[in-house]
Image (spheres, rainbow, N blue to C red):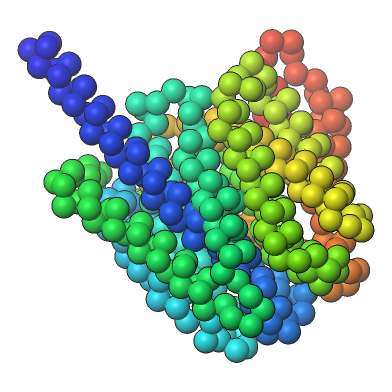
Length: 415
């Protein structure tokens, strides 16, 4: 009986290992599609002669769509499984992406991005929930694997593809490449389904009120609250970077598109390496140390980008920002592995914080850019992070943590 039990456990691990590889491949494909959009969408908004405020609103509408659907999609992931939701949401993204190059007004583009944000939210949530289910077979130091796979596509494969396909006159090839990558992800999921590898779901007969109550109950977990706070901050800063990098680089600094693409690749590659190896580099450091170093690197990088007058210092700024955002990602993901509960609901709250950040970052940055100047939007994260760090120092001065009290020390990342 013992040998039979061990055999079943080993078989489960092998099946889950194959599932992990497929999951990482899908993350690379989806990340590559998003990486193309990272350059294609801002440049397309420029072709529509959008103002800085309109650019911010277009970037923020996707986050608004995510916020509306994120909690229900977490419940659906637990009940019905992640595969069906991923396939349906990916097909919705395909249809909406196909509409974008035909749109000639900012209002219509905002509407498309709103619904695409809803579909993307479901897709990314299913990937996050699927990875969380597999974390019990992995060491905590590998918590960044899934995001690193996404970033490989988002920061490297996607921007390189976009640079090869994009021109200021023709955006169709880039958007069709996004569609092809999304359909490839769907094909991987359907192939696994045909191989007879079943997905275990956690369907329960509960009312929507009970589902909401169970989701909100998870907010009592300090680690989850810290994760949500860090992710909101990181997402807001990155969404601002994503929305205004290409407009600032091409319209203000007059840099060629190839240079912009390599800036995206530099920032993303550094973030990806930092996140992937974070478990080894920062294993002996406290949560507060990681967060403070990440904040310093992030605000320094943004300050350099905001004051740069040529491509060289701007590239230095993107490099420093890449290190900072990679460390912020590690700070949140290592704590996410400590959270217990339904993985779909946990992924929903995690994604909700990202949605709020991706909505607020571009909108606020757009207002700043319209009022003060387009390049000054990069000073916004600097001010925000300085305020947070000052609040931390004041809090520690008023109520310093006891020596050796790691639980109290780690709480500084929540505020």
